[in-house]
Length: 268
Image 1 (cartoon, rainbow, N blue to C red):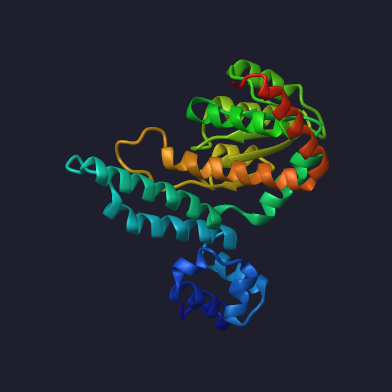
Image 2: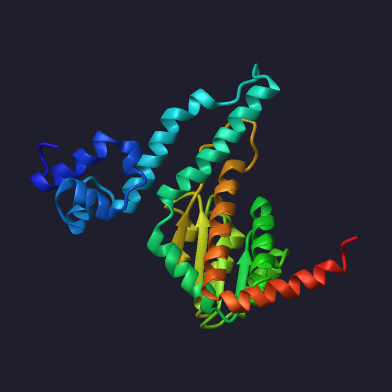
């Protein structure tokens, strides 16, 4: 801190005084607490080696999660009740932590692009595939032309057939799955908007996505393929669905009523 300009040092002081709260603050709120401007907050973050305030919050959230994680880690001696409590706590952390790591500006832009899209292609493989298929179905129920092919070859071809005004939405925990990254790159080359949800700020998918939404959680041992992170991703997808539906209340309500009538034929 002695090497920083006074205003930059005040920004760092605000973060160090209450790092837990800082994770949930906006750049404007930090600026107000430090008695400076938002641009100074960004500059201070860059002086610390980050691209900006969002990247600093992401690193801070991870550090805080790492610090608290071991006390909740599952061990072989845990009872089933202990496992239940620790897993539920980890999933709750994944949801709460997403508030800090999801860039609100990127989220709002994603809502606008999804609402205006001619068609939306959701892509994801492995444990991300069910999330992609669920998202496509839910957006379909509010009148958006959405699809989520299960086969990776079909995903790649479908992404290449997109055009300007369409959206390719990728879901990938690592952001490094070859098939998903290739589908997003093809969509971008075709002129479509590309959006991705991942658990990491830096990844191959971040290089080809126009909008990146970072969400996830600290993982326990004995859990396969980042289950807590999937909870975070699912929550963000839910928020996107609700936000888009609210932008088109009449058409969304009409579509949902039609879905309800259709599904009634499958109920006793």
